[in-house]
Length: 75
Image (cartoon, rainbow, N blue to C red; front, side, top):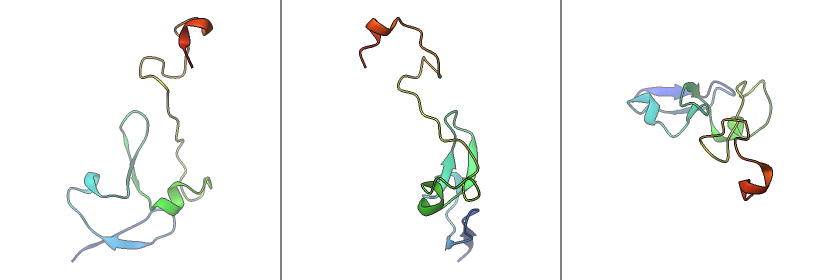
């Protein structure tokens, strides 16, 4: 069976095709594939192991900006 490797620590795992459905496949907030990273590297907070930002937004319409006044946001 083919192998795939974590891009952060080079841990080895069985290959799954298509690669985007591998449980180590990572995507940014916009759905762009960033690579194969194990959970340890992804959650480490170390930019040498996972160099991409992991932004998340509370609402898809905001994308980092508040479009409603503070009193209407409800959070």
